Image 1: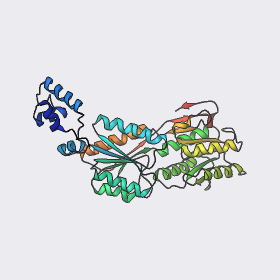
Image 2 (image 1 turned 120 degrees about the horizontal axis):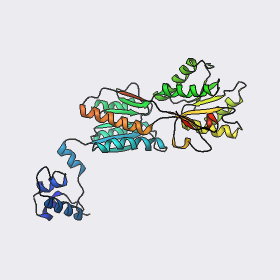
Image 3 (image 1 turned 30 degrees about the vertical axis):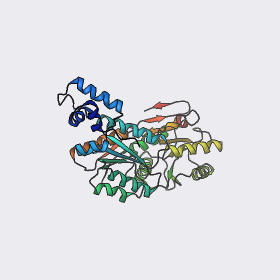
Image 4 (image 1 turned 90 degrees about the vertical axis):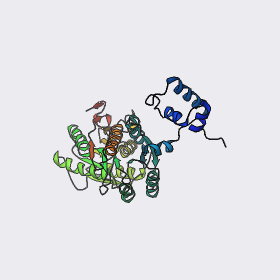
Length: 344
């Protein structure tokens, strides 16, 4: 095996003390008044020898890891990409590094990833939590490791959160649909009882009443999580109803796109027969064929806000839970307004 090139090897090569070389390679040459020519000679030798700094050794010296754990249940869509981009913007500006982990919707794996992050001495965790994972995140809280949830939250865990403002988003969508003369608006929900989805359903029922739209206890259908067949079936049943809805408000873009494809298969004209709207503004929602009216979740902003909040708590050593609700713009597309696209 090739021998690791450490500071001692570089020091021997340039004929200087280990301390002097350490100052140069840690960016302190000016602070320690080391001649520029000497610093350049050290850096040049380090490059030629293939020197790579030891992250954990540096952490021991400064007594901080400068690491933040970022945990997702899934990275298959554009959401994780956009959120992570926002997180990295903030971490990079503050000289923090991230450890990215994915649980693939496995609660045991989620708990294991949190344990591994704590073993690596992360200074905080940013996570999109799974329902029922309260005990896993409580491990971090008990270890005095601050947690910020993004896009969702666990009500019983004393952690901060950054999410979409569900009430604002749903009210914008309902108001828009009412303006398009839709009277019977039905929500297509999911049987996954996350805090975010619960808030969206509650906001829907509240908004229907507030706007004076037709309301009954059956104005919400529940589809099975990650089941396209279930969404197809619920859509067909709604279309076959004698007094079928003239608008469907889907609880997420992922549900809405499947609904739109089934309506097309059934020969239902959108928006003439049934208008469709949703929440998220995922990457695929502005496709010419599936041009979906939606409220932007502002995922990159969620990532930035979550990272900024976490670093602020670390700096102040104050982990009191804070909650930010982001109001995204309504983006109208042809699923509700024919040929017009507009951001409000």
